[in-house]
Image (cartoon, rainbow, N blue to C red; front, side, top):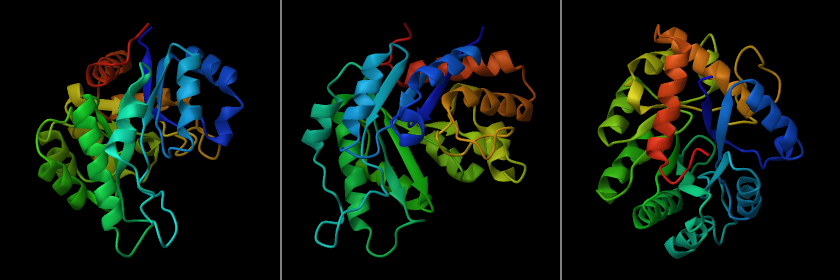
Length: 264
């Protein structure tokens, strides 16, 4: 069987945290061998790390999501490079993130968001682990900051990609991978379907971003890693290629990028 990797999920979230055993069983049934649990806040990270430690086929990433803001006195929810490096120094932590920029939910002066993104980039450089990047309504600034921070980072992945082919090309030129979610299965997702056909096979990943963005045919239900199968099947149709070949390629890509993850 050609096993898949769910390259981005949130098994620590309440919708999924109480169902770990069932989720893992469903993964096995659907040919999903591994999953990466992305961090979104430092408060939640201990739960993420504990889940990754509990199973050989689960991995973790540490970071602060760009939507995470504090109060008026400290909107940035400050995090230091040293703190990230300390938390990343763990065998099951294979990436820094998710991090990036999001101008969809937050408005006003977001310089704190951009500075926090820079901190994550510098931590990734220092520890030699890839970045997991979230960008929404912010592609130009995301790419600009990556360029400004310069070489030395181990690149990473633009997760849950919903931007244009042009943005994908720029991300690829910087050395990044592109990960597609259940959105690619939606009928009205023409832009994402074009990206699915455009990205070179050796730079493509698949994910659920569960518990969100449940793919067809399970829209309306809580998403989970087992459903990454439907993401991969949809992409294989868009690319006019055999599903086993798509599964093999995306799994190989995952372990190439996240080279601290060991496929036991």
